[in-house]
Length: 536
Image (cartoon, rainbow, N blue to C red; front, side):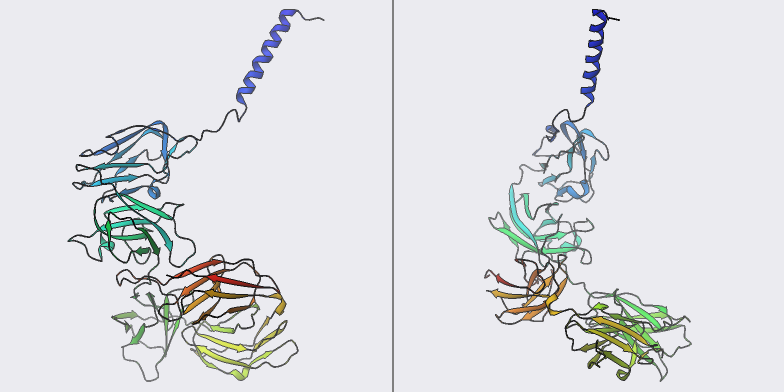
């Protein structure tokens, strides 16, 4: 049956209506909004003088939100009572700042928002917005510029505070532990350079702080610090480079406690090398003790025998200029049994020793009951020595390529502190072919000596190192294939280790240089790396 013309027109119109509706619903109809929000006005105006308000409002042309405000916002100088900044969780067309602190007279304040202000829909940031005002007659306008490096690691930290402390009649070296700085900025998450703005003329201490608890004060245990050697004078055209370092912890003794039968844990912070533990209680003539270190925690274990019928023991802990007495409550508890662990397992490097460790101190080794056989069942000679603090017996023996070594420890070869002995123990380790390894020769040009030359992995963990006091080629042989990085420590005091800095003693950390290798280390292949140093 033929349709009438009006019906046909009606069907076409309906079809066009639905097609148009469908087109409106399709995604990707236009370009993504990448325009950041714009400020319409501020009340009071930005860069106001004679500021005496307790609330600031910053109005935008669209809804905005605040993201990561705690990380991004820097107030300079810092306020003792933090202002309330809204919106807290939602979105608004204005940001309000309510000030609770008593503002200092004749002072320029700056609120640095970093990248925290974003539009509500697309998250486009209004980058590095600063709201500045002065309680005095003018806005301070001087600046200090510089860069942050890490003293030891290749990559610097992010979100590093850089601060100025004014040198006046109240200044002393301990101010960084007790007071907030006069001026402060932050490198945020992607910068290594810094600019401190709106500074008044004067003399200042310049420091940087990786402030992990956010109080704008230096905490030795948690924070990294950098400081310029001398006070700086502002205005200045100098660009300052600050090397951020972790201080070695000052020694601190932690109250000891009995953790198992005749085993007392003495916790500590800092360097335990000069830590001395002395029992001052009266003990029987048969009394014996040993001291070992926990392999994972900062604790020394004091082991003793025989078991004594006492309620407590009194110990004296001393360390250089530190000395204190502790009373340790004693109760009857089960003693630790002797268990043995060894390292390495599987493959062993040509120069690597075989280590035997115990869960209780060793008091006897019978080397006649320890045998090493190669794959041809030939006896292999070894030498052994005992690390008392690590409680580890170290076996050194000559190894050849592509070999298998069986280490057999017969019963009663090892005797623990509480007279426990071992059963028969069997271990095996293997060496690879020389062709499975690569090598690197390193030449140093214009280096300062002595120097510690290290090959590290991507995390900075040392895989192998050499110490040199003169300009010569350094050969790193038998390297497992892979990617290595070069770190050179300029050992200024010649003690064969890296020494960090100390703020109170005005000691800068030793200089460390980092280099990329030209290629990966490959099996049966060698690299020659020439490292060029810039004379200081």
